[in-house]
Image (cartoon, rainbow, N blue to C red; front, side, top):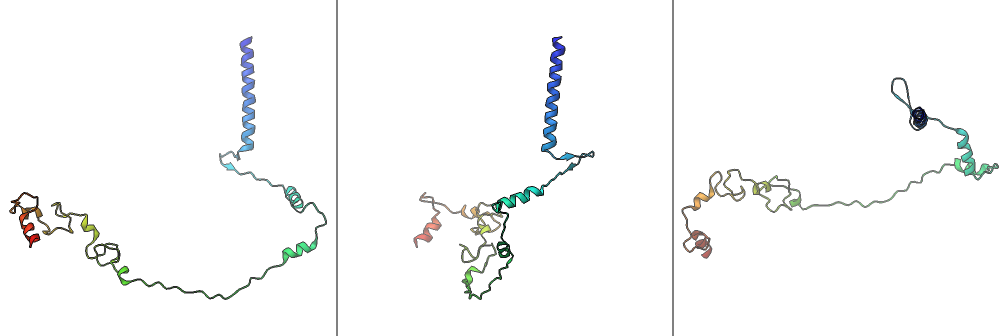
Length: 165
C-alpha cells in the first residue's frame, strides 16, 4: 500500500510540475501553430496610454489651449551667409613621386632608385640580397676564392690595399 501511495504522490507532483512549466511556457514564449511556425502575439491597451498622458500633464483636466497653440507654431530656420577660409595644401614634388614603384614615395624612401623588395630577396641563391649582388646570376663568393688574407686579420688583402690608398 505504501508503494502505491508513493507512486500516486510522485505522479501528482510530476503532473503539477508539468502544468506549471506549460503555463510558464505559454506566457513566456510566443505561440506555435500546427505547422510548427512561431506566431507573434502582440497586444496594446489604449486606455493606459491616455491615463499616462494625463499623469504627465499633472492630472489637470483644465488643460489650457494656449499651451496647445504654442506647440502648433512652427519655427522658421534662419539662413546666414558665412565666409569660410579655403585652405590649400601644397606638397613638395618629392612626396608625390615614386621612382622605383615600390609603394613608398621618394621623400620617405631611404633608397628611391632601388625597390625595397630587392633588399630582402635573393634570386640566384648565393646568399647576397639582389640589391647588393655585384654579380647577378653567379656565385659572388667564387670571385674571392683566388684572393687571400696574408696577415690573417679577416679582411682580404685587395680590400686593404684599396682602403690604404
